Length: 133
Image 1 (cartoon, one colour):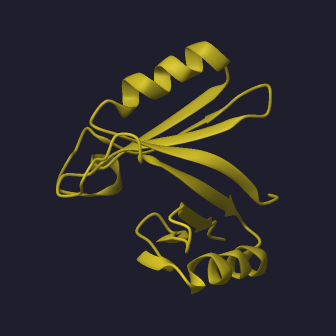
Image 2 (cartoon, one colour):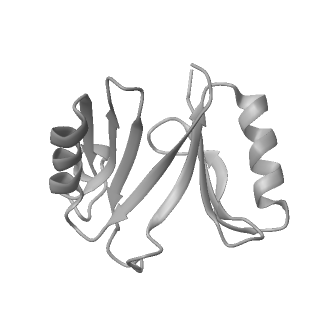
């Protein structure tokens, strides 16, 4: 899979409704995963990760803000880089996080992929996900 860049929106408990609405608007295939499905013992029905892939080639991702994390309307969008080219994505990660602030180190996660989150030196939020084998 080639690397891709797309918006990732955080929601305040209404990610399912929002992502279903975007599917109605843009069409396409929507996959929603809850925190409960991933084995978390909190926020069972909240969306941990949602991804809409449209016939027009758009990809939109979103999730509910977990309990204990601050939800900030207006600053609730991050740019997501994802794919399976580990070298390419690690290179982006090193540059983006180098002079920035890392909130989640780039490391293997419970869903099997490597994932990291940071804010670059200009205050832009980035998420990098390297698909597992």
